[in-house]
Length: 590
Image (cartoon, rainbow, N blue to C red; front, side, top):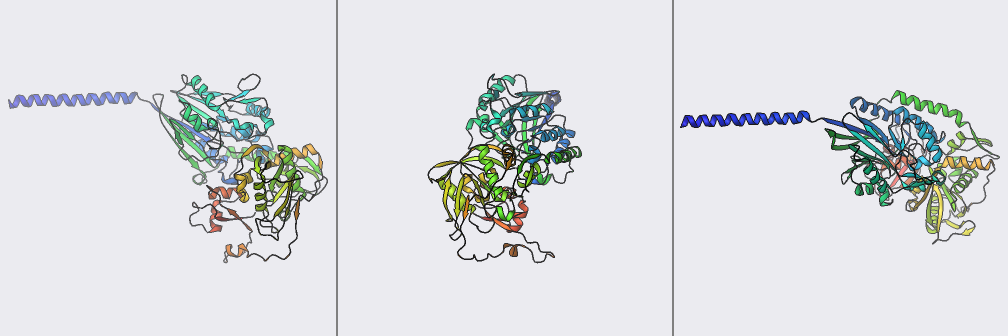
């Protein structure tokens, strides 16, 4: 019995072992049949013509190209996408009406660009021209020609790889109709992004394995729900990934909404977004997202080919910069001491151009944005760029009369000392009384010759720096933006071209009363801030920024053309990542 029992037990054990081996072998066969592949999507958004490292803290497209090339060497399946607002914003872009940026993107091997609102700043005809000279399609599925309801741009592209297919369709923001120059979109319809996305999914779902929306919609709460990527993700099934732009958000690992991952890489070529999609046997398996940031990429060598293209663009533009755009019969005063402390004829001319291009009730711009004078005689593009080098855009906002007065009070708070926030105006007159305390100095405000009504609403033209709350203009940040126009340098060039020869004067738009008694000199900030041990003391001037809600140090640094490290050092911030609303931040005046 014992032996038989042993034999039976032995046979049972052998049977179990054999079953396990066969089971493992069977599993191994299944595993061997499974084929895993990776699709890498690299993405940028809202470059706004910031192609070179150093300006506005971007790493530069020449280093982004190095990162892209690294991924292409390691992976077979790589797409490089841009989510819009690439070809407008800085002089290097506007001088050639976007063609310079397209040449750089061609050199980098971009696969797709979705039409952002600022892609229309040169007009729809110019966008069609740029689409023709680009090596990649400019796409949008929801922009239709009004007369025919045909697609204005390529709606989607399908990419076929060895074992899977990818469909990418474009979604453009309907806000383009008022967040770009209105003339640029005449004759076009912007369909509802949600309905357009549903139509694209229905058309592509049986033809592709991976569904991607390349969108310029954003995730701002101030936008209409259906015109945001969140609205699309929550209402449209079947989209694996939305590569987004427009709202300039930094989504480090993406934002998962239902089964759709939304990614965005902030702005100005500061980051390169990286998405990796894993497919098993040609079917979607998993998705991850991250950002390559400037801090981890500055040790990289710039891609020599892309760097050469950028350098060639800059060199070739020297001839374009000598092009005449107008003429002045008088010297145009843009000297620092003048534009930061009083009315000048150049300040008036710039403000007039803002009213002319927007048809606003009045214009309001800061003296700190005016960086040079223009001699009597011919005016070239180079002259204009020297005066207005920052690429700020002209926008219109809706302002109550009481808020307008508050903005003027902020602008005059330091008078008669020079300050970058000093307001130059058109369509408006006001008086500054420096004998009164700051916040109570403004009087006799008129708009179009009529006394300002504190309860009435006005359309004010300003620049996007002030509209975002720069120079302590918190009341502007709270005002709704009505429309978004061209850059300030373009507005001035167009105005000069229209006017021909100009002879602007100081007209008494700003009346300044004399001081009744001499102001006591303030303790110079530089004595506190400049280290004593330096062999050669460099005296710097500083102004104060009041921290707004949700502001971070790097964005404040960007506003004042410096670095967050510099601000941290100047202000002695132990933890530069923690600042509070109402906190005073000193920044250097350049």
